Image 1 (cartoon, rainbow, N blue to C red):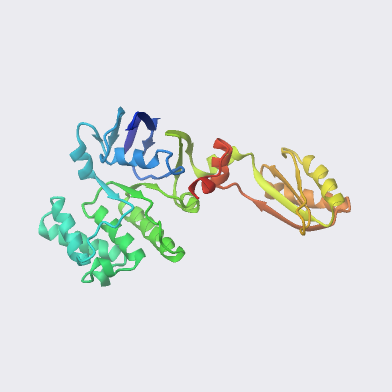
Image 2 (cartoon, rainbow, N blue to C red):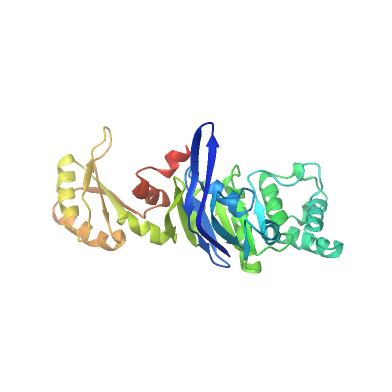
Length: 323
């Protein structure tokens, strides 16, 4: 559905040349949901704008939905849907009318445009809002309307640029439930950018991490997390002496990394270490700590997150970069 080779874009700012995208190679298969992650300025939005023909590449090649973005931009646009960060519907336009007009602009006849509008209103739980003005919808309803507008011409490929930004947690969950239903029913290929790492973790079948204009990681969320050197095991104890003893025991666990003792003022000392399959080593670890007389107060195992992946790859936290 998408194939790029050394796709690049530079901008001139005064006398300086800024390399926003430095030659990315991307392949997206039909039916996939792929997330692009990266901090502001990493190049993900510029990449998305090139793939949707809103920005011409400086160099490189790309085909999107079987068409060349340089030589056949109009054909690319016929075959994709695009939901940007802003609302696409006019605030004073009625929801059903806006959808039907969108269909006509894509060349559908009036009967087909009306049928598609009705189908999408029903599919996205907007049936009762057909005669309401778009500007009077809730934030979640407006985002679902934007998605409906991007799908009215039945594209095989849908681009979502931060679709849930600004929505409350309930509206975000509701939006993704509808996207999952769309994919199940229509088989739509989806490419999205998001600042919410949990969305990419839960929804995406593949994750591309972009930094400084390059793709630095590509794989499933679990594959990328496997690069972080295992789960983080943390246990708290009753004294600093127990912490030192516990750290020595932890470092003897097979495949464990170095153990770190954290003794914060006013808190019980903690021991932290990373190990493959933390849940699997926990029973034996607890037995050994107990046999050594360590006063164990609590224990937890944390799977790596996509932010841990970014931290491992770049030395920076994606959450901190976004903030």
